[in-house]
Length: 515
Ligand code: HEM
Image 1 (cartoon, protein in one colour):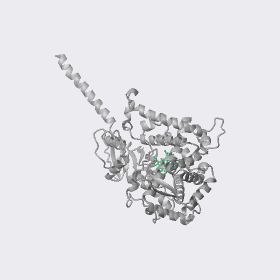
Image 2 (tube, protein in one colour):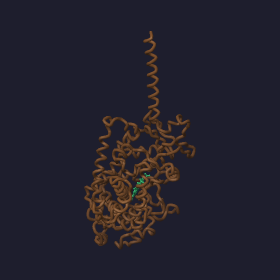
Image 3 (cartoon, helix red, strand yellow):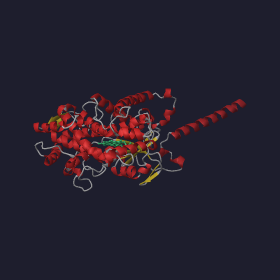
Image 4 (cartoon, helix red, strand yellow):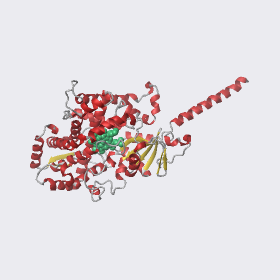
């Protein structure tokens, strides 16, 4: 009797405890906006897709990434309005779909939106917790200060000269190896950054450059591409059960090997006889991190300073073959300033006289933004904004394609004219921050000033000296940014013997790649 009474009683206790544990476990994996009831608050979020129980929209996102459909998926999410709420496993994502809300939330409220979440895959396994770009703010601050000093400090006034000199290497390479145009588009910003960071010319083989590009592409695609980024609790499982680890750790080891190889040539010899440089005199002397952290920091400047300009130059090339009429107009402007018969190469001093070319640079950045989804910032305290209440922990992401389309007339057209005419947007290349391309707030791009100069110099000089046409069928929406070979077919031809002579004479004044 006692036995038959005790068993159901003890069973119900065990059952209740199990239920409680399950509820507690479920609550810990709820995204922040669904935990309002626990905090005694009701959060009012912008609209978004309903998603599935527990995982929300995560499976759709991961599938879109796997299939290479990330951009259309992101564009579709913007149909909900200026902001879209997505439940992503344990995370609440809010996509910012217009320049206005990026400015309001990321720039004006930077004090509470500069934090990064922890990325167990992209930052942990792939970057060994050393890539400054993804670090939490306390660990990021010192590296950022040094990067800022490098790109915005006193030395920055020479960056335009470096771009002009390196562009001579670019022109010569286009002349000698026109089929390799896409490789030259990478070596050009690498040559500039190498000089800025190490004060030495870039002396790397094509294979070495390809490795570095591969590292950058695989790093960028590792961000937010594993379900573990969205359920970080899984990293508490015993290591043998973490079946995903091996893949990402191997990637991290490859990145480390490539970085180490570059670093050996960057830090100078042990006896301190290296040229004075940012690495030797700033990073190695004043950075409080380990040498490995110094390596990641120094190489971040090179890869970040090379990859986005590379992709932007490829986008410009796409615009050149898809919109020959626009480029002809830009060329006529350059010729009005530099002469029609291969008179002289355009320089940065010509910039104020070339508003159309400045507008071309801006339009390339708007037309095909190189960072379609800017990695998230975490809100550190609850925020009331325009009728919404966002809980601390909400992750804001800049959804660049809608940001670069919303509010623009015929946004899919490449139309530099849209930047001319109005006082706010017309004129010089360096007139505003162009928030749409370089993000905003405390973590925004530190290299935007250099980018504006080097793109202006490269586009105006290439256009002055070469003709570009399609070398086969192409789709102007497919830039194949992470393709190791030619991303789309282009035929490059020097415009005339006089232009060839100009390139040869100018480039002979400097060593290879201008330094
Ligand atoms: C067309 C050229 C470029 C574009 C479109 C671009 C865009 C961006 C974007 C969108 C970010 C992310 C900001 C965020 O997370 O909110 C970024 C970060 C960064 N960019 Fe650029 N960038 C360009 C050129 C450069 C250049 C020339 C440098 C030279 C050093 C550079 C250095 C960096 C660095 C170091 C970061 C990380 C900043 C940090 O974590 O604090 N970028 N860039």
